[in-house]
Length: 210
Ligand SMILES: N[C@@H](CCC(=O)N[C@@H](CS)C(=O)NCC(=O)O)C(=O)O
Image (cartoon, rainbow, N blue to C red; front, side, top):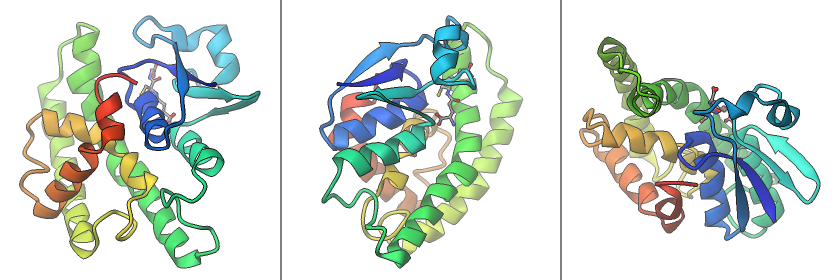
């Protein structure tokens, strides 16, 4: 069975878990507790040299970086699905690559910092930095204006078909929603997209823990 090294509450671990659930790929979650610093153990650094989670081992094949793992899982176990476009369709593939880059460059850097302030710091008993939350919120506000335009043209980020680029947002976008920053609700197309992707059974299965 695919071994997923990470921790249930981590957004990056759940980014992999949601793809597994979409495709009914069973996995064994092997705890690397980032609150205890286990990500920096020699054992984990051998599988993830940057000292973060997640990493996988699948039938002797090792991989780290949550988005690369998601794409590997679709390539290996998702034949016939549309979670990644057929590489022969160069236009759909180009739009998909665009969507993956949008998430990685325009959403995650801010949303994951909000996650740090709103989830990780409280879990470590540290106070959140309210000024930083306000600044991050303002940055994300601008980025989501662009999302609203894109999602006004088509249902999902890469077109009218759901791809893993949409799913990659889930762990952090849910934190944004829970934080009641009024960033999603105030934008009808973003709200529609968020409501649809977050209601998927795959996400419901891992929303609390991978
Ligand atoms: N780009 C990496 C980011 C991994 C990452 O930042 N993981 C976080 C948890 S979501 C982590 O391990 N944090 C612990 C630390 O930074 O010490 C990926 O997507 O796999």
